[in-house]
Image (cartoon, rainbow, N blue to C red):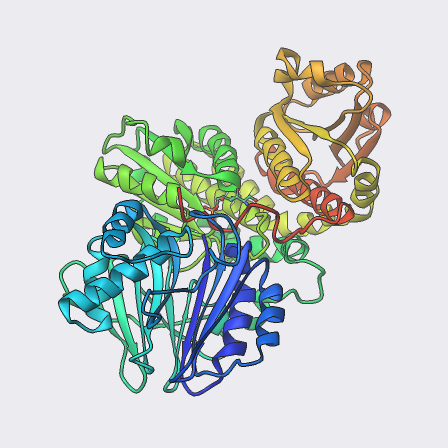
Amino acid sequence: MCGIVGYIGHRDAYPIIVKGLQRLEYRGYDSAGIALFDGEDIKISKTKGKVEDLKQKAEVANNLTGNLGIGHTRWATHGVPNDVNSHPHYSNSGDLVIIHNGIIENYDTIKKALTKRRYTFESDTDTEVLINLIEEVKKKEGVKLGKAVQIALNEVVGAYAIAVFDRQKPDEIVVAKLGSPLAVGIGENEYFIASDASPFIEFTNNAVYLEDEEMAIIRLGKEIKLRKIKDDAIAYPDVLELKLNLEEIEKGGYDHFMLKEIYEQPRAILDTYRGRLLPDQGLVKMAGLDQHIEKFLNANRIIIVACGTSWHAGLVAEYIFEDLARIPVEVEYASEFRYRNPVITHNDVVIAISQSGETADTLAAIKLAKERDAFVFGVCNVVGSSISRETHAGAYTHAGPEIGVASTKAFTTQITVLTLIALKIAKEKGEFSASKFHEFLTELENIPGKVEKALDSNNIVEEVANVYKDSSNCLYLGRGYNFPVALEGALKLKEISYIHAEGYPAAEMKHGPIALIDDQMPVFVIATKKGHYEKVVSNIQEIKSRKGKIIAIVTEGDETVKSLADHVIEIPETIESLTPLLTTIPLQLLSYHIAVMRNCNVDQPRNLAKSVTVE
Ligand code: M6R
């Protein structure tokens, strides 16, 4: 839930660390810090606030030399966001310095034991406890830094990606990982450390992703050495050649990553089905699925586990799988599933959906499902992420890096992958005639063009945003396939513009929420032609008679809803099960414009972080 960066080599570490932290700010942004080591002096600057604040503070200090450096951008867990609790943290001797992403759960017990040995603590963090534990082990056992880190980590319970250096060892950084991501970029006589590859992609394409319970001693002039933290066994680094390019992780002329990512959706959806969707041959091909198709065909049911927007994609998938493939589906919040002793059998298929592939609750749900013998299939965006490695098989979404904290293209590409899976199973099970199957594949192929057209609604959406930007509450209604889209629209508005919003199945309105409707209440209704159109039109009438403001997302050419609603936003026509790919577009744009008009930080909303790697 924090971002970590490190460098050791022949360049100045400062600009690499600062730029790297800016790229990782999506992971947390309540405070930031940097430590630089020039072989003699260690300089630490840290501050509450963003990396930009850190830059200003560090540059006033004006001593930014050093070929070794580590930096951190924080999402607070233990201790409020302030200068003192920001990372990096020193050990009591001032020799050891650490950055940490994760949580040390037994830090209090360790802190008490260290306090008895006269250790003192400046901050409220679990991380300062860990670095002093490492120092204590180093002194007591008379071992070097790497060994001390290993022994100390065997005493802690929790999750971590850490980077530590020692004043006595100016050519070495020790890193370790359990539960939080950690990549090492390998250059020419230089190494980069980061939570993901974005901080070092302009310097090297070669990277090693540490596995859980692995550590590495990174020493200049030496090859990277990996060890298992538990038993010291040597692990052999798998050096990957990364495909990421710089353009993908920059704003490319847009004011915000979120807007860029909304506009990338036609391309992202196309990239997601490219090579997998073959209408001419009447085929859907997906390596991860093809190898395990029997598991799906013989499944009693599918259980989908996910969080947030990915959970909404799971809800859309519930409709798709049951409707097209006729397999019963349950959709679970990963955070609830993992703690409620669920009944799982070896005939269940669990699908875990996650953009980042690092969400702690989803990872824990996967581990539980595997322990209980289910087959687990992952749908992730980030290649090489923990979830993609933890699942038995899976399919990537190929959306490209999503940096805005609010998920947009992740959602539509997840639905695309899940639709492909459902189609393949439906075909194999004989639920579809060849012609219906072909019609479906052809329409899916048309979706990127239709998303382009849905994006043309931007100007109208901006006008609507201007009218409702000062609202305190909003309702979002949809039925069938568009009920999850209503939930997703409400989540987008809440998380980036801080307006309270609720999503409801339109027919549920009369069981309670209708009491909220008055002339101050904007109600966003998804009222596309397919599905339960007439029923939704009745719901619109009910809102109108109570003077609610109606903003309807309609199929182009609709005149009925136009005559009832205060505003209409048109989207192209498509088959019912594909409508979420289009109806979600204006709702994403709407939350974006409202957030901009309210001067909110669109890409880094308060209190949030892109990947939630803690419980
Ligand atoms: O990386 P994941 O898809 O596992 O993340 C799950 C949620 O944290 C995420 O979708 C979150 O709800 C987004 N900020 C919503 O825009």
